[in-house]
Length: 78
Length: 421
Image 1 (tube, rainbow over the protein chains, first blue to last red):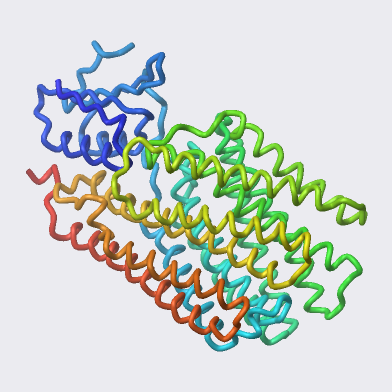
Image 2: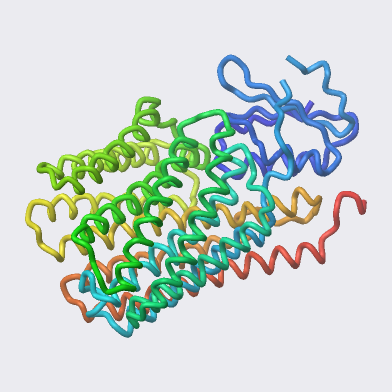
């Protein structure tokens, strides 16, 4: 699990950091992005490049985004 | 949970850039007019002044704002604008020719040009409003959407009143309500269209871009109730020629002053103070808004025409400052986003797409333009210098856009994609 906490980073660093990590992501790896808002443009980058994501907002209004290449994210579904 | 987001959120890069390039070109045209006719331009209601005013507010500011709406609608509005290539082409062509003919109409005073410009600009604006406004009513309501709705409705009202006035110019026959209509036209354009859209977008992007605390819910909820209410009542008061109309100006000024104070506080208290030139445009924009409000308040008291000119110039520069700052964010983002979503591995990082030193140079030219414009109000020949600075500023803006586009095309042809590995 690659945890990327981008809550304190200015735009556009969260998108750049996670996209960069996604480019180098192995098939068995998962990125867990923690962010202050839902990164909508990131989802298009991931899905257009064969990746999969799952996102949810927790009770403290923090967004959790899980990203893989193989699509196996069921265990993270809330 | 999975969110039901539609993909292909962002419009093709050409959709947004055609509006931004045109804004730079209209800015250069405005600068040339300023260099050639500085005294006329500083005379309120002079034909050259009206031509310059519309080149600025339609050619530069509205052109940029419509281009930005094509990008922002999908992200902030939740529903992308359909057929962005075709729709942007129609709006852009109508708007561009309409602006040229309107400026020509003011300068030449030819009646057919007024009719043609009213038809083209009216069509462009009504088409834009009818294209985007229904999308805003489809989305779940939040305060930014409420602001965008008010902005578009105000833009529509501005256009209708503009058509009425263009018709009066064409016929050379001004009704007894002409000055009233002109006041309402200005109020809806400056506060309803430009002001409300900037405030609505600020509620999202200031927090998102600069990691600030969010604007208060009370502000976000009520500002978009008070602006349309004050504008509607001001229009009614003007038509009925009722007393104490300054109360509505005071209310609108108070709202904008509140926006200035809360935005400035958020920018100063932001969590991470990384170097970002766009924030300098936000600071200068807020300062110019403050100057504009103080000057307008002074004008209401002293009724000195030069102070009104300062208020108007400062307000236009406030909007331009925010727009230039946002362009510096939007254009690199679009280039990066389109390359990244197409899977290009060597996509440059956003801060390299328009290098910081180029944005700093643009900011310096903006400051020189603003300072010289302020001095020119009291010493009009200086406006030629303003025109020279602003010409270089808009030319440099065009250069920044071209260099970003060249980098985009270079990466498209030279970089490897994920699927090629």
